[in-house]
Length: 79
Image (tube, rainbow, N blue to C red; front, side):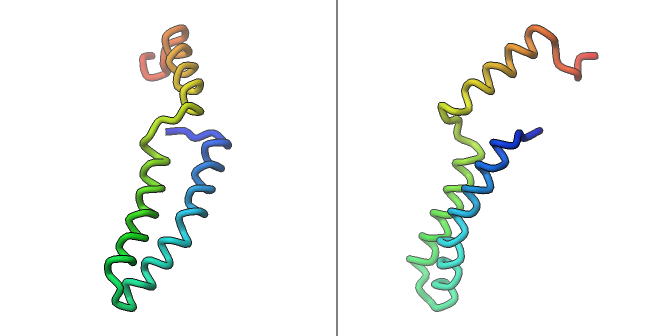
């Protein structure tokens, strides 16, 4: 999978936003607060997973252009 610069920057931004709750969750887990620590880790994990697997309206033009390109030119795998 090849990523463009904008997608890479978007993923880095999500990781930067997910890092503080993840670190706080790990610290709370070590202190014995399992509910809040696990909740924060779950929230951080959800942020990263949603960024990777949910199609947003901003992703649609790229998807349509890729399918149109493949339909008109053909993918390099077909050669």
